[in-house]
Image (spheres, rainbow, N blue to C red):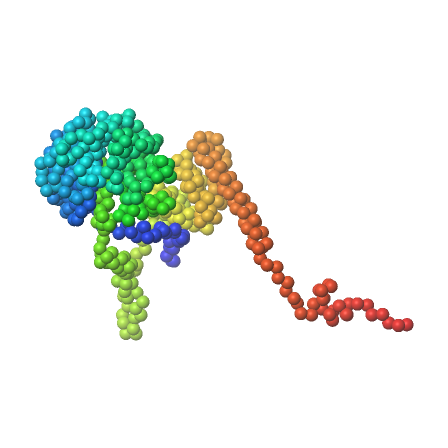
Length: 528
């Protein structure tokens, strides 16, 4: 008796992932190191000086980590309530942070006690930063004000109350100590000049503003709020340049790569998007386990650090060239299967005694049912959720095999409402796929023939049939449009080709006959 031949699953071409230089660059990070903090991580800031430690603000503490340490090298705990926005000074020696108790604290990185405490705000301070001259501090608060403080004298220099809602983000100019920009939940961005004692430019983001970022040239400003990331041209009076909406939830943080050519945005949708700053197209995407509140890049992009709402700090370090080469070598060696085929082509010699061992054939579930001639159960097995969604080519192959055997009509008949609905769902999802259409189109016609009598008895089946009809009508329209386009292209190609006359030797221009044939065809007149 001949052995059963399993159903042949046709292998269709797959569209591979487009590998770009950005993909190679941003995927060249090790597996993340995860550290549990004491609360949601609201701010991450890298020190501008080597060894580039970074400050992590979470709950009532600020932890300072080394570039490759998994334990904090320094902990600042002199906060009575939740701390916010720990920021290094440009020399890396001082750190400033706000707090829920409205007090701004200035720390020496080498010590633990606050050097200065600035009191004046009446509500939580979410924004802190140093001005470019290193001797002043800029703060923004939930009391709708932003203020400038003098570090040596610990006094307030200016207070600005132009926002009508919480001030939740801000950035100072690194080129001019008198300029700083604030973003508020009143949807506005304001550029302040300390010399004018008021804002000199206002922009409307349209959503509560969560984060701000200045380009190194300080000609462009990036704002994040709601699902939008917007770019503004400050040299043209705050003119909007680009508005991007690539996240599904609120964008919480922005940062720039070391060369300034890539912009990163983090969101509550657990994604970090990487944009090309030339055309602002997304070139890469990072996925995380929880909503992201803060993200930062180390100098030279050596590591990417993200803080999440579940108190997890994720640190990804860049691979060294040796590790990258080792991984690529492992990937090349992965498909080594010589061990499994060893001795397969061995031919026994004349005096050898051959012991044959029966090979057990392992059949898939649908092949097991086909072997027993249970055609309906075989189709049911091929229509299981995982198979029809992840491997539709298996379902199509089983339908093709049933059609080849002439038993497809029997397999399709006798189904209840749920079984027929599952079959129609598969057809709706795949019948217009050019890979599957030659098999599924006759199957759809057969289903309509078998179940013509029950149309109108089930609202669920009727809705699916109407969807299938609408889908097929739209596909036919698309195909007709494509045929028209092909006709136009053929006409264009034909008209663009140069016309060339091919001369045939011995041919007459009058009627296309050869000279001899023409002479023979003429009637000869003879004199009488």
